[in-house]
Length: 317
Image (tube, rainbow, N blue to C red; front, side, top):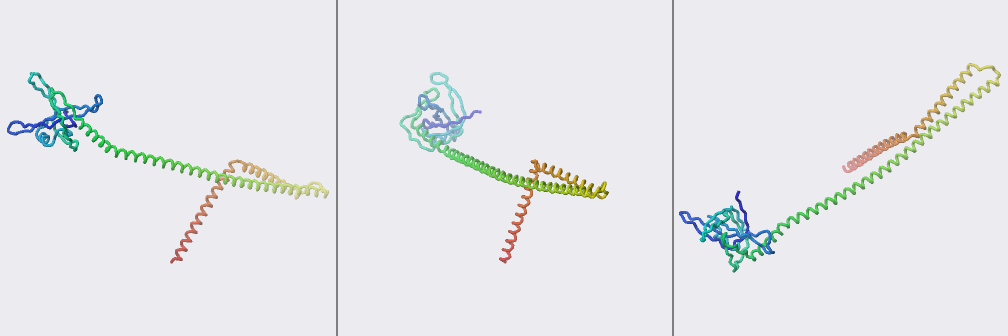
């Protein structure tokens, strides 16, 4: 592939001639000064490149291009050679112009300094310094114009990032506060339930102890009855025990054993009430009852609100 893209300024007016023959074709030659990206000894340097245009491109150059005009061209490299007057072989390199267009709409004043154009066997001319200054100022202005949208976009992006992180921080603070409030409320609710469970357990233990006291009193009463029957039997002077009395004693003994078993069962019940598992069961029971009560209260409130709305609707009608 042979493709060249250049941007620079004409060092002099194009030199145009027309070929001989049935169809005359315009041929324009000019030299393009292309700035280099680096400076030598603090001064700008440039390459001076010979360009040749044919046909309409040559006519365009003759009509519109002048010394100092900044243009952009595309073309291809063409090499050649010829023998000069001294008989030496001279090799040439030209750019055959395929497309050319203005790169700067500004008109540049012609200076008194004439740029000398030579072929490859002639020294390169110096570039016009005034042209470079105007080009630099134009490039700076163009660069600033291109940078403004980028700067605006960068500022908008920074502001968006700041807003995003501020929102994240706010959400985290809100979530932390919500968690703390929930933990505080949950802890308070749990403490209340545990206190109620402890209170309920103590009431149940007291009830069982009261039952034990009543059974013990019943045992004492049976023992007193037995003692009194034995005493009456002895005072009567009868020998042995009648069948009726023996039957009553057996009934009292069975009753006594049954009451003692009841005391043992009640004591075991107290021991089970003193375990943590029993407290947990009471807590679960209390929570279930609370939820049920809250649900009933909510339903009652909703029913009341419906009745109020219904009465208001009837009064309006």
